[in-house]
Image (cartoon, rainbow, N blue to C red; front, top):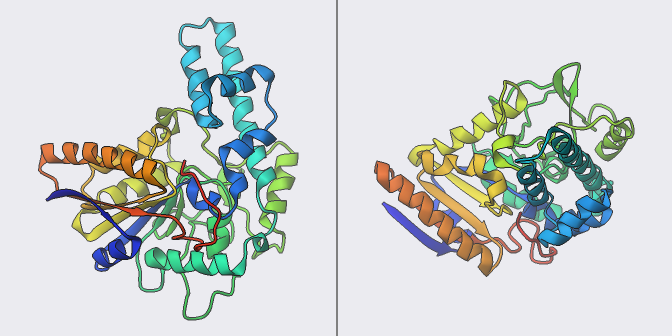
Length: 339
């Protein structure tokens, strides 16, 4: 009823062949294809005040969300002026992070090799391929997943992905039939007259990277959740982000018919608002993609906690941990650190 096992990716695919597979992606997915997405390189490009940069040094981390949590913690007990100053630093850090992600982002899809894209499509087919009815939910902001499933890509007539991001021709159409869901927004999603809009190449001929650059140059920022604390990431009102959160809750309530995979996700405290739904849910099969021994050890402890919670209610849970190295982009992909 309850167990934790280490398996290969091929083995967990076989174990879940009769289940609907949903996938939670984290930043490791993108870093493996484009190393500049790691926090250390983003920090090198970011423009922040010296006192904020000193917090990174003191905390000994390039993790932007960790530094935001430090600033949020410091706000406790401050007077009004100090709190306003700390909030201004957090807001500036959020904007700088978005600018930095865009600056290091590949400007065009061909910056990633055809071979790597082929490997990526092979991977995605296990979840949203022609014969699969799963969903991919991602906490990433970048364009790589959208590029991988873009309808203008020639990926072969026998390899069509069942991909829909919730936007038809640009305007938001709801996530009822969506198979690609951006849990924290993305660089190519904007509010337009109070309604979510997706920047698209297909209907405009303008590359997404250029669309985004034009918006940022006018201080128009995309729909992106960059809060440092998980409690602040949880949507508080109706709209696209609330719909995305509800979709992930639905995955966690998938019972015995569904398997939830993770890849490139560190399962860290910054996403506790999402991860706490797993032990509270009913999905019975979890497959955690681990990058290296540290991930494996951490995930085993996290899984023990989930199983203990489920055991109190008599709800079964089986957790498989598999190595994620080379699974998405192929064996020659650059190494990634999940975040």
